[in-house]
Image: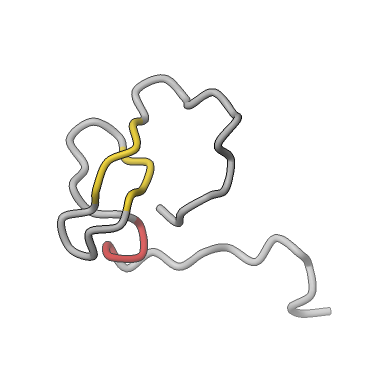
Amino acid sequence: MTTLNDGNKRPLDGVTRTRCTVCKRFAKLLPGETECAPCQGMLPLDLTGGGRR
């Protein structure tokens, strides 16, 4: 998962801030996950709508 700046929000059930084993950055990982989303090859979604028309 990408790192989010939401320090005041309550984390989702089961999600913990843990260090990625590949890039060593802190990320929100589900139980059993060891790699963040970018290290797993997931790309962030463009939610701004500025892509195609």
